Image (cartoon, rainbow, N blue to C red; front, side):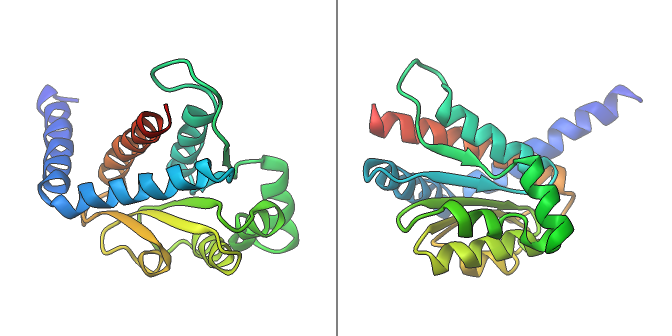
Length: 191
């Protein structure tokens, strides 16, 4: 692979991040998402997270940064990634892949909790069902989306959208920065 291809990957990633940062509404949306999460934790509620493929890895990363540690030692925060493989394969087998996250929300979420739903397309059926279940239970929904936000954008209390029309990996690269920013925001407000 020529070196210029590698450099081009970084240039594209920088362009997508610069475009995202140039819209001050995006920064405000991250703050609003952080405030929703801080309020939930202050009330004794939990934060759930879900996604598919790389977005599930991002959801797991978000939760472990809160329940483990991010930059400094502190108490563990109540964050759960909906990533239990036994649950996922059981529900996918018995009900269908589109219910793997909503069944989890139906089982353990309470009013006042928050769901971080990650979907670069905003149209993944299992993420949409999770958001719908969350709303029915009084669970706040924060969506990390891409492109035009898809149907998920309309189900969110707060949507943070990376309005990139290209490949999903560029959207995911900004999503991980948003996740780190959210975790830092939560820590700074709680500690």
